[in-house]
Length: 205
Image (tube, helix red, strand yellow):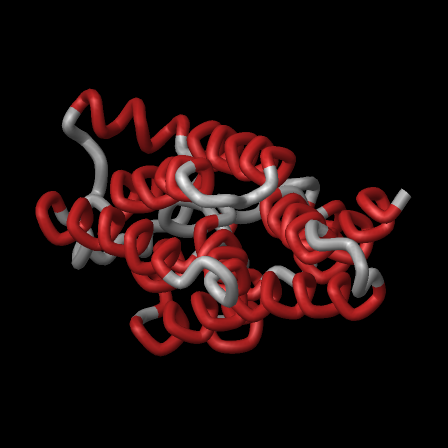
């Protein structure tokens, strides 16, 4: 029962779509109609600029932190309560009901999850972030670095004493991240993926 409650609470928090709100208030636009159409940090950065991208990034991270802490506070004796809260946040971020279930890809929210888990596993963020940053620095493909980061999370947790249920959950989250990046994977394979630093503001028609 706690799993369901935590995921519902997290979903409500995740539905607070940072990129959509920043686009509406800062740029007076619906980011779903510009650039890649994705409601995430990278599209906000490319379409609205660095400040909007940074605000979106931080707010999406904080959503996971809030979901984690809220569920941990409610279910203090259940170790995985916070993790399930973050699962709900990511689902709400990726599939917000009031935006026709079209949101972001969940990477910034996964970063928030990793930061929360780092309380007991400090080298998880260091290693996962390191792999992701190296990929981005070497290729300038944010999507590739994001996918590598997501995949590394369950691998690192598996090597620790983290509960098996938690590892399975993060495997599912990594699979979701790959699914959300399916269009990026196609563009990467065809050599048409946008690189970091390329500004793209065209309106989708």
